[in-house]
Amino acid sequence: MFLLSVVLGQPLVGFAQDTQADEPPMVRRGRDMFGQYCASCHGLSGKGDGPLATTLKKPPADLTQISKKADGIFPHAKVRQFIDGERAVRAHGSREMPVWGKEFRRNKPDPTVRLHILAFTSFIESIQE
Image (cartoon, rainbow, N blue to C red; front, side, top):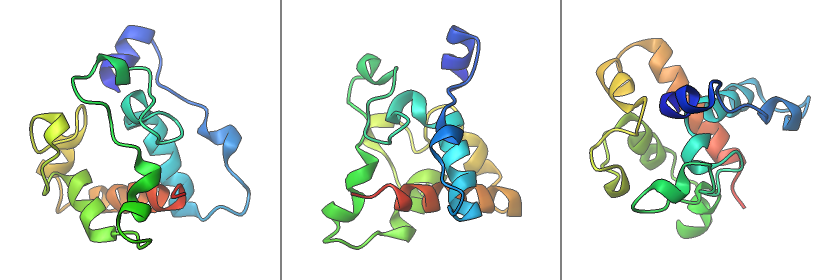
């Protein structure tokens, strides 16, 4: 996201227009953070169609299909492990998500970081098809 912000001069935005008033606060927070940190690769919809997706060696995952691939059950712990770097993502090359993964992994004990990870997970669960 930082790279895209530098290239384009501003972060990806747009989720605020799509949110609903009855959306839980943690999902809303995750949606906003996703737009800032993840959408450059995963796209605003989470389908892997972000503006940098075509520049990657392996396309980003379609995050809307996680539950479907897990027999209809959203795997909260597994998703959190991907976000915080505990579980390797082969497409990323290292354990950390591009741009922000090292920061989350290094500061994982920090309560704010744990809330960010929970918010990301809540949002990703909310976009399951």
